Length: 271
Image (tube, rainbow, N blue to C red; front, side, top):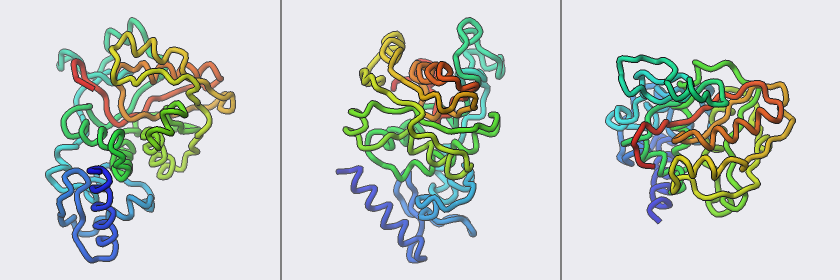
C-alpha cells in the first residue's frame, strides 16, 4: 500500500509539474522542490521523451539537491573487471587478485555507485516495492557510466524465471535496460536470454550457494551470434548471476559481453 500511495503521489505531482501547476517532487524523499531554471520536468523522464538524459540532468529534474548529493556516483578506484573497490585504496584501479586468478566471463563492467545507503534504498524500492518511476532516474545514472565501454550491437537484461515474473509483475533489470535502449538507440533484445530454471531467490543465499543456484539457469538464443552485447542488471553482488548469464550468451556465439548495472555491492555488505 505504501508503494502504491507514493507512486500515486509522485504521478499526480509530475502531472502538475508538466502543466506548470506545482513544484517538482523529489523521487527519493518525495518532498517538493524547485529545480534549476531550464530543467526538464519529471513527466518528461517518466514518458521517456528526453533524448539523451545524463545522471546530471536526471538528478536535476527528479531529485532535490540534498538527495542528489546522497546519490552521487562512485568515483573511487575499482577493479575494471569486477568493479570492486580495492581493499587498499592506494592500489588504484587495477585488476584485483581475484580476477587475475579467476577472470570473469564478461569483458568489463560499468556501474553508477556502490550498493549502500541511499542508492541501496532506492534500488530496493524499485525491485520490491513496485516504484517503477525510479527506473528513469537509475537508468539516467547508468547512462553516464557506460562511456568507458565499447558500443554494443544489442542490449539485453538478466531475465527472471516466468513464475517469478508473474509474481512480481515486472523485471527491474528490464526496466533499466529499456532506459538505455530508448536513449542510446541500441536494439533491446527481450528474448535473447531466458531463464527456464527458477532457482531460489539470490538475496537469501551465500556466495557459494549463489553460484550453484544459477549455474545452469540461463539459455541463450543464437540470434546474437557474432554480436557484442551489454548485459544489464540492477545490482551485482557476487557476480554469480551475471557470470551464468554471460556464459550462456558466449556459448550461443556472442563475441563480447559487458556487464552494466546500477550498483556494485562492496565487500561485507548485506543484501
